[in-house]
Length: 299
Length: 247
Image (cartoon, rainbow over the protein chains, first blue to last red):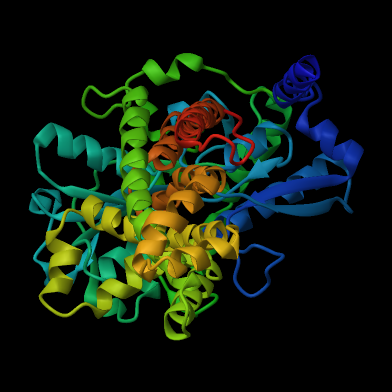
């Protein structure tokens, strides 16, 4: 009895760790299965989210993802290549790419050195600055004004790390709330639990557009960091990475990216028909001019 | 799967002050224990009162206790937590509302909400254990106690409860362990307990499996130790000759 239990435990542990080796490249996998699996988010507005059709994501990053699918079809000469969608969260996205469930994830994933140990990133598809959202009447203009105040940010983001580091280094005495997602962070701000919400500026504009009275809020403060979003794929697969990068670079070069950008950031977007009014930043313009798969910290 | 394992991650710097990731787990464990223990004490007291109420003669008191159990047992824990954290504070009178939402440290207000939530939720479950413990005793015991002139209070105090509590130690142990596991809901309102610190480590380091493996081990060891402790208590208070407790 004892022995059987131990044997069983060993078997369970072993099977958990000894996942099948992914010797074949992503392109071979797509070719043999006839399907490409796209990872998407459910609420990263306007990058990758679900609006009216719960089976099909939409968004800026998703449009770029479809450009890659076109390129894969051409490369493999498979015009009837099937697309399957797989919803990921910030916690599942990396393991699902690694274990072969998802072939390509495009959402709002920051390219950073920690993640580069686990996955490969495409050339950058967006660049954000981390800033503050606050009420126009709050009197908060920049980060030093946050001394001794309650500040909210979303758990697991770079903003959380920056805010905590700033609090420790400059002894600002802030109370930092880590909410579970951007919607909840904004709720903390709106309900008065926090005076400011630190996050990627594009996402702040997204939250502001969803507010009851968008005119009451303002995005302010000097960006504390710049971050480059990229699409994630498995490491050590240069053939697939080249197809992805080339497709994105071509979209940048032809200027088509400007059209896609305007569609999601300068015009009303589903589901509520809100306009984010978020003009293209100089940082992002230079990224489009000179595409790179490096993270912002490496530049 | 080409995953980059790194078990040394727990000893690496988090990039915030001089903290290493292991410090986060230690502080997370501290919050988990602080939430669960305080909530458990309240749940045990309130649940016992409610459990007694359900077995009392008459109509009103048992009905109140039954209503309580149905309400708290049939609404998902997470929904209850969001009620206590987001909805209830908005209905507090001023200046209490501003004090709770703005002046109080956010960790404290989250802590209060989650302790209240877990205590009231678990009290409903403790109530049911206490009720069944009392009802498992032969009817003749309370009848005999009343016949020799004990009041209802004395009957419960000296005859029914001392036996009932001994009977229900095993199911109560399970509730006791549950409250530790359920305390992980606190991560969803920003209290940095064990699960929240695990998720944070996973996000910051991108060493997701290591972080969740350590959390699994910590929860497992914690619960196994609590179970061993409760087994000791059970042995210690056992009445010889009862419940298979041979002398």
